[in-house]
Every structure is written in structure tokens, then in C-alpha cells.
Image (cartoon, rainbow, N blue to C red; front, side):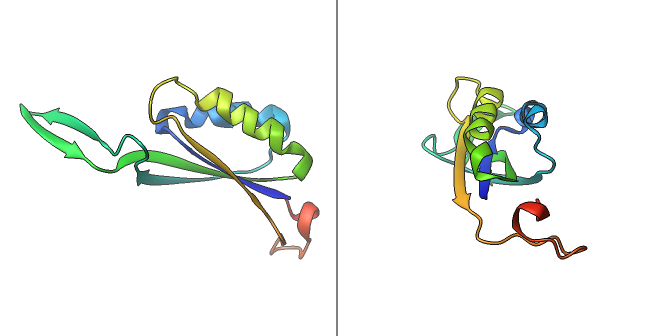
Length: 112
């Protein structure tokens, strides 16, 4: 089992969800986050005054999937979240050692 974490632009969230649905992804967790990468934030103008925004709003999407689904899930997220502009985000894949469904006690793959 793997945990796929994607940090994407907020307006791309619906596109990512729609891309994952046909793959059989049954659930995902979404968190509103702020951060910066190589662009180190951005400069904006508000009422004629220029100011620097250090942390940009992003959305973190977390999806637990079977190991054989990882490549398809990563590819779907990449296609759905890509704008071709700086700040499109990142995708991380981590191992899941154990998963437990609290209500039933099901373990690992059955808990997904």
C-alpha cells in the first residue's frame, strides 16, 4: 500500500478528484495549506502598494492506494493539476505499513 500526497493549486482540486474517480479511488483527504517552493512566494500589488506574499495557498490531497495503482494515480494527478506555469505543485509517494478501519477492525487493503 502507498500514500500519494499531492500539493496542487486550489482551483485544480475538482479536476484532480474527477481524474481519480475512474481509477477506483474510493476516498481522499483534502487539507488547505500554505507554502512556497522555488518561486519563494510572489509579489502582489494591492491598492497601489506592492507587497511580498511569502506563503501561497495550496491544497494537499492525500490518497491511500494499492501499490499496483500508484503509477496510474500519479499520472492522473499530474495530468489534472498541470497548468504549465510555476507553482503547479509536487507529488510524493510514501509506503503505508499498516491501515486499520476503526469501525470494523479491517486491516491493510481491506481497510482502504
